[in-house]
Length: 112
Length: 109
Image 1 (tube, each protein chain N blue to C red):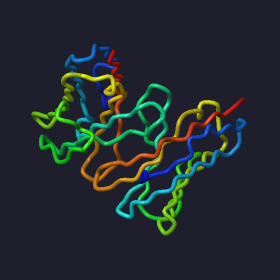
Image 2 (image 1 turned 180 degrees about the vertical axis):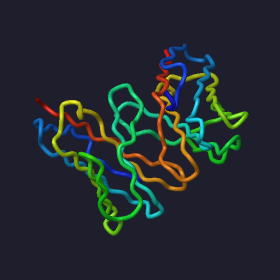
Image 3 (image 1 turned 90 degrees about the vertical axis):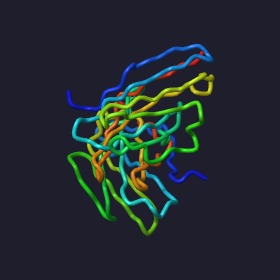
């Protein structure tokens, strides 16, 4: 399977804990995106990388959120001191510089 | 006001009927438009990707873009129960996708 993969698929954590999610893009894609989706809403843009450079961050991405793509391949999204409002589906997508974005299966975060 | 507006539905149609989905948008900077299908608790799956005004057809799916009216549509012919899902429209502004809230479609056998 050569699609976008995400790990874990589901994470349950207690409020105040840190969590980290991983995304592996389609191998030939140099752009990687993170989105967040809550129930009944469409995905909302968080940030994106071109190769290893983080080019843009949404205002939705508070200081508790950090994303990295150290070698221009996989990416991680870390949430520090999780809050109940962070409960959502975190989606990763990848694309070529001008092209369609393909999404992974998502990581469902539940903060208790 | 959201940049992309979409009727949440649900839209219920009998098997074999044509499903008609619509979105309006306000951002004139959108260069590309996409339709995604999303099953419950899954990631969005790309269905159609269009650039210019006009129609694009792919199998049972037809996408229409009217940039003058800021209106995009998706038609699904010969609908099947497996088409039951949420359909998301999106506009692309320099790589960032802005999504509508999605329309839930139910195709009944």
